[in-house]
Length: 464
Image: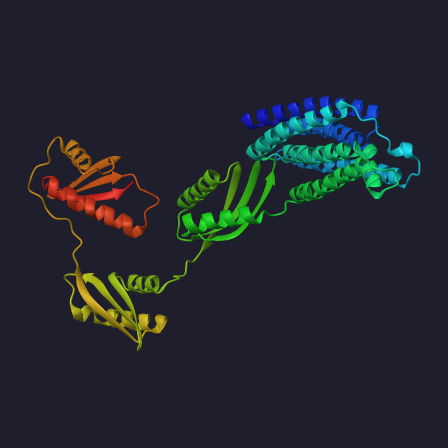
């Protein structure tokens, strides 16, 4: 609603100033006979009509989406911008026609201008007003993504240039009487006002080309390459686990409607997949103002895309754990070395075949020269603690974290199974840290807390 109010006030201001300038230029143009000033008056008259259309457009665009217009009414602004282009083309055509007639005429009165101080005053006033309102309109158009206000801002920017051209034209024409009649200089000075009107026409045509192309592209839902790259980069950096398979979007007024297809592991439960889709939609909304995103989830069998993942998948298929995995690109070829975690009570005879099969599969999938394994027992069990848990245990943990200048825990949870205890200390995560930096920070905090707190539980610092 705030955006709609801004656009409405800007459009209303534009109508008011356009009306005042049109009246002032028309009176002075008719009084002096200056084609430059009259072309400016006509330009301002069409600006007045365009500003009134813009006011209508921004009010209609502010209406919410309904059954007949599910994407809202924002396209009316692009239609109005296109209508303004047509009005400006008509202005340029009239100015060029009138200038051609005057240049081709043999009648000296066709080039006569009655210059008065008001001719200069009205142009200077126009310059000041146009500079202020074009700046204001451009700022609000950028804030609200309004094509109609952007068209208005472009019009008044062109008014600045054209008013400057007219000011130069009438100033030069005022020097015609000081030049010798019949000379080339006199011929140029006498027609300076007409030439300035042609400059105005060329400026208008340039504005028409830019605004017309933008309005048509918006109505045709042409893709914005910069926005597409932004979305693709956002997904690649923040949601790399869920590859973007298809993307399309359209902009309607200040809203951007985005549809994307995202690959997700087919093993995900539908509720979990829905939560991932919600997270993607929230991510896009946080980085792209006015975005409404619909995520289509495409179930996929995720194929490992790195040697490390391939090795871990092979180990998992044989019910083995893997750590300390190294890939050595030696002169003789690829050499793989890893630790395999096996049940500590099992015998080598029982696991001999699975181990050899694992080595053969890794060699086959990675074309490895050799695969070496180091067998380790799986001893991931919690230690036992004899000391009782203090009543103020949570307070002790918080004081220790404060002493270490560590982030304040958002949650502290202690779990007990007989004499085995584990205490989870949840802290806010920093999205800027790499995986290695995060691991280093948590490991350091674990060690520091263990040296400060009494040994009543296995401490584990984790990100929330």
